[in-house]
Amino acid sequence: MFERPGIFTDMSLTDRSADIAALYQELILDHYRRPRNKGELEGATSSVVMKNPLCGDEIALHVIFEGDKVSDLRFSGRGCSISQASASMMTQLVKGKTAGEIEQLRDTFRDMVMGTTQPDDQAVVGSLGSLRALSGVSRFPARVKCALLAWNALESAMTEVVDRKDL
Ligand code: ZN
Image (cartoon, rainbow, N blue to C red):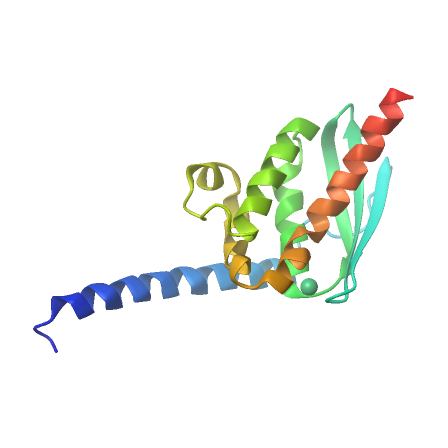
């Protein structure tokens, strides 16, 4: 079998993607165990609660907007590792960004977890950072809602702010 390089090529490829999967798994667990930006937020201008009854996930997102820029945000709640890690990573990524920039990130993230774009796609690599760790969710359609929960909460908070401005 050592004379068949084809097997080695396949094996090393498998090993490498196994390494990446292990690294991603580690990142998800790290954010799940030590969530960033978790807790209440004093002076929050928007608070949105979102639930994913399919899995029992719950996220309360607290945001301070300056104009249409997210100047600070925190989340509370509980749920599976995917929902909590996604919320933790999202808060790190979107802080300081405008609604327009966030919408673009959300679209990129959604396409990745739904499997429409690949995790090595240039738009994904260039913008999503640690959230790429959730790319494996695309193989588990039932978990897509877990991954998108915090993003849906943020979208709802942004819609509120835009609506208020229109008044
Ligand atoms: Zn979940």
